[in-house]
Image (cartoon, rainbow, N blue to C red; front, side, top):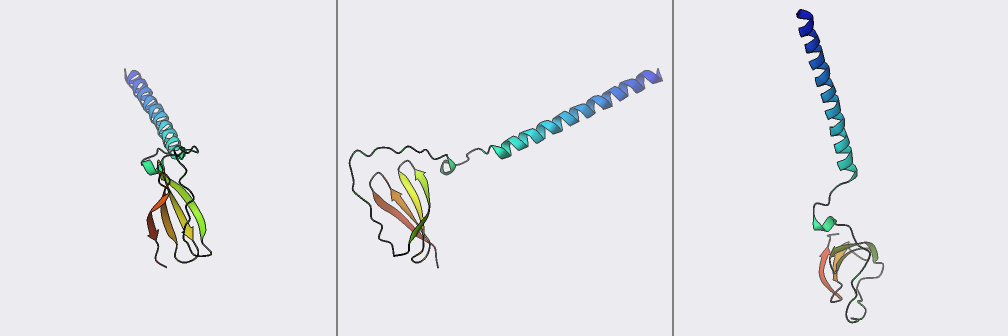
Length: 113
């Protein structure tokens, strides 16, 4: 009788060990997958599409009145028809919000020198 109880206990311990090992492997796999494939949490982090909407009329050229030595450091799409353009040089760093639908600047952010 004692031998049968020991075998059952041994089988239960081995079974729980296997369940713990498999559960740990699944947890590590899920964590690795989530780290390598992050979800977009905000609309600003949505992937940028390369197609641009065609404007119904030609609004002409937009000329930025920026000092000499200004360079564009990055451009990020903010909404359907707006770009955030980061500028450096020619003074303090700054960001310009460009409304593509109306071809005008709708906002400026200047970083203190």
